[in-house]
Length: 158
View 1 (cartoon, rainbow, N blue to C red):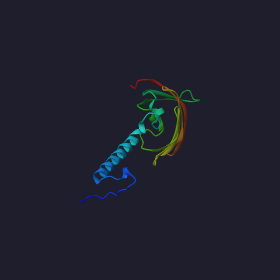
View 2 (cartoon, rainbow, N blue to C red):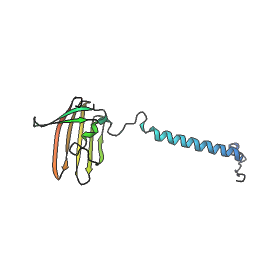
View 3 (cartoon, one colour):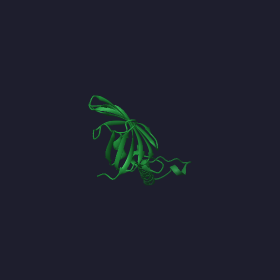
View 4 (cartoon, rainbow, N blue to C red):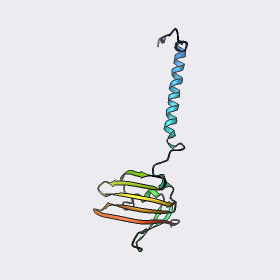
């Protein structure tokens, strides 16, 4: 490559640099831009930022018992590794697309669609990390469901 031409501005000493000085400045600017961009990308988990549905991650894993409101007899026992499993309470283990409608420190609302299998909308309110209120409704297997109940952690999974 030939010698690089850099325009010179007589009244602006900062702009009157040799080609090698200009190249070094350009290299520094590129390096600063790259490191600044990497810091911004890495900053998504920085202090002050919260992960989506973080409240569900704070629920204590283990054995949970869900009691349906108003029946007194309908109990469901679950072994939860994550509170996120509660979102698809009536579609467990299915691959579904979801949209977070509400996400606060004590409440989440998620709508989801399981292609060809149905859909649901789940509202979870945390009272403590071992006590929740669950309200979910939708369609599973071509049939509607509507469940409202309380979930309590009962211990370790067996």
